[in-house]
Image 1 (cartoon, helix red, strand yellow):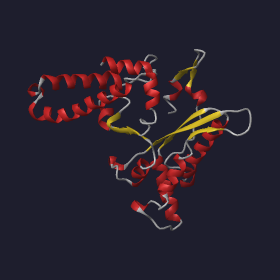
Image 2 (cartoon, one colour):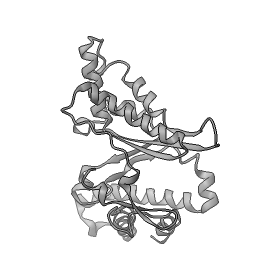
Image 3 (cartoon, one colour):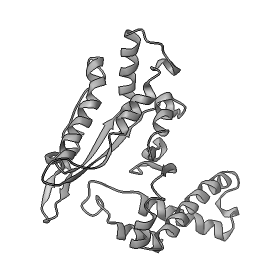
Length: 259
């Protein structure tokens, strides 16, 4: 963050370019710092976010990572001789995670002048060995409404952001249908078709490994090429280039439609 963020800029409504760091607050606690500091850092971050929210701003909070925070909770719980639960984590782990994520949302602030602010929480979870049955991961998945699953294989192929489109999901799709239909009535169908193509590609890859691509039907070959376009030209993004760091919604829709 300290090395890359100073290089990032954002375009203001008046057209000026401004460094992202001018609108960023960092709360840094490394793994070798006192356990109490690691446990308190996430609450410090969300409190700062709520402060700016109450000023009428829309705030994004990134917590990296909630797994380290949960480990701090486990250490404190052990020192207090509390009854351990799964994997030694305290029994109240899920409740603490829920109380943290539930502090996100859009609010109408008290007092004057009248203003509305919001906090969006993006929490990173680092399950050991990618095991989704890890208590922190399973508790988090039961709380959050959106999940982006990072894939090490995609990162090794230099595909960024390395979000696995097969395991990622959003529970807000139904709530946003009216917005999508108002903006573009065909978007929902296009998105569904794109997901089907990517899922079909994953199924075909297993066949290709056994019999080779030449043994596939022509329609399946077209499916693989279409999925390749989606992966390399639509889902891949370079945040350090001016033309690719931001993609408006209308452009995303037309890119999918053309593919």
